[in-house]
Image 1 (spheres, rainbow, N blue to C red):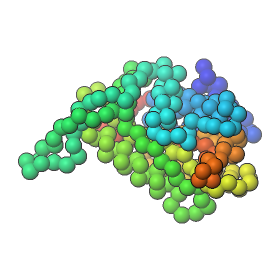
Image 2: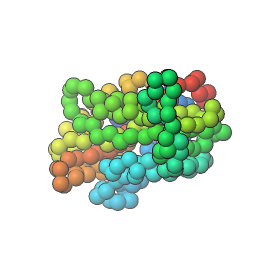
Image 3: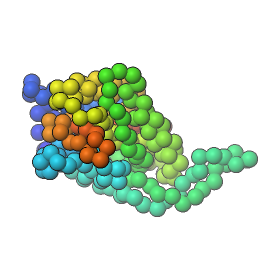
Length: 231
């Protein structure tokens, strides 16, 4: 499969793990899905010859790419649907009121059912400081919204963050150093499966209005509540 082919590429000595990798220990059932997501990110900028990519658009576009990875992994998806949700605050009796809202995505994969709440994040690539603050803040928001979803007990709740790190345009070597520093921090985000793709073509992907370089993308997935899923 494409997933196996993509994974085998990472054994080549010229391909560094700070440019593409998947860490799925926390959610092993999603490993193939995460590799498909990496392949989709890389394919988008390759097809558009380095002039455009999926990752620097908003939540709706990045969620669509994630759905594509699910389909390619053998799952099926329901996106952007009306659903009943619980309000986060409780009334004087300790009950939570219900309201109509929008669900980001439900999907089934490997015989298991998932519901996700997704957020987009735009962290700055820098040499030091709290590199993942924006990602962690978005994860907390996604977890909070996931807890409001009304689903049956057979669903696993997931908080998902699509991150598109940016920096000011600079030479490719300097960008590579910033990416390596950021990826090392990303590896240590607690209780998350994650994946990232920083292809060479991304080193020149500059948004001209704000004069920002968006060299690639990362994805963070955290299970919300419940027991750990088996592989």
